[in-house]
Image 1 (cartoon, one colour):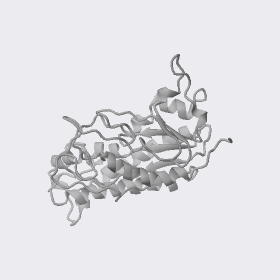
Image 2: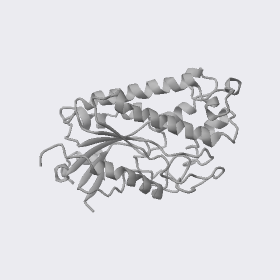
Image 3: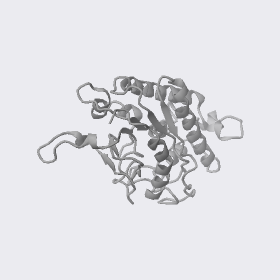
Length: 294
């Protein structure tokens, strides 16, 4: 197995003790940004890891990971305004020759939109109130078409802004790698006191019955996957790859309130779950060329 290193942006800064990080010693150099699936899950109890922690690359690889662990869910808008990330990606004074950009995004934005209160305008929430439920006998009866359109427009604009920054990178044509999320089970399984649950809480707010909740959660994950997958055709000037991880993890059982199957809480995989997801990512990353001559 080749050497693999994941470091924070601060590791690239020279100081009196450490000296500069040997960035040039690695064959593949990736920049990563995103949500809690990319950040170290040390704040969760029991602890989990992250998708990028223990890769097993075919070639020596370093990932500079700008994702931050924390109690609050990071959104794509927040991530794309991070000064350290933008500096490494596109600032002419500090940018580096990345071989690919890895992005974990959209999941927390979806959770946040789902938790928009029933009092909000239908164009600003994903769920319909009980008085608005449709007549159809499928989970789409609970979704707000206007709210979903707003969500699509928001996420597309944020991703377009990211690609504009990529145009200023050392290698503007570098691959951009996104991923789907696996099927979560709406359940009362928070990450810590006051941190979650997320979909379970949202569905309670809208009085959605227990029976359709899993199908409704699956529909949201599939619609988000379709949106992320569409970016490759929406932005044809860029090389966009989507790692589809749906169906990789064993679902948590409904009604459980702690770690279950491949999930440590409602929306974060266990360490073993992340290992399964890495196995889907690794062939994609191993297939990219080095963009700088050796």
